[in-house]
Amino acid sequence: MDKMLSLIVPVYNEEEVLQVSFEKMDAEMKKIGYPYEIIYVNDGSRDSSMSILRRIAKDNPQVKVRSFSRNFGHQLAVTCGMDAAKGDALIIIDVDLQDPPEVIEDMVKAWENGADIAYGKRLKRKGETIFKKFTAFCYYRLLKAMSANAIPLDTGDFRLIDRKVADVFLKMREHNRFLRGMSGWMGFEAVPVEYVRNERYAGKTKYTLKKMLKLAMDGIIGFSDRPLTLCTGFGAATLAIAGLGLVALIVLACCAAHFPAWLWAIDGVVALQAMTFLFLGIQGSYMNRMYDELKARPLYIVAEDLNLE
Ligand code: UDP
Ligand code: MG
Image (cartoon, rainbow, N blue to C red):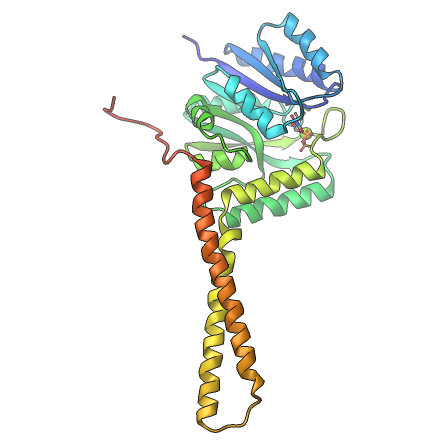
């Protein structure tokens, strides 16, 4: 039987773009040729997005819609789309046409050639503020430096994932989700598909600064233990310095050299402070392990089995 594709499109107050976006994406999916479904997840829109979706779904059986009771945020809307998808490959794309639908064909080709994940890598971002470009540039690099697993640079959620990757996503039910980090953590055969990110077709960004900061924090906190354990090294280094200071003071005292007595007190304060940092870091390591248990991610992920039932 022919393989099927699922297109997952999160929607939040997008009445200006929905109709055009549907026409372009639908035409692209028809061109690619596989049977397909388009799953819109209405993330609590307060404009007429839902009535537009009702109309589109009425005339197009390939269109499926799930509507949230309120705004849960983009990452959860995409997760909901993944839960509902039936396809052999899932494609996650923004509704505002910033992710060009033409790129889907390249992603599908990469998938046909064996890729499990074909992720869109932004060569350029058009029509975005210098502030957004600069903060995104710095953030992706900071995240890469802080996290143990490879999270590709300049990559958003626009990607194709094979069914086996989607099934792992279904098992990962952590609440504060950072999908591109989860995808990087999983591994698999991931290939970049380069593209130029367009301007928004119409309307304004729905990612407020607050939502962006939350996402940025989810990326760091979910995929790096550095913030919790950072002070261990600092505490150890400071304690070593205080230890050297103590040795120096003892030598001076033994040589009957004159030095101010408050140097003893200073050394003691530095040593105590260092120990506080050290133990904070050690506590952090315990918290980190508890956090890992709570996230309850799969222990390992199998990409292929040979001669196993
Ligand atoms: N979106 C969503 N819920 C939100 C915010 C955004 O479902 O709370 C959707 C939005 O409709 C779009 C995608 O997520 O399809 C990306 O949002 P947007 O284009 O506003 O973000 P930007 O491209 O400016 O980062
Ligand atoms: Mg956008």
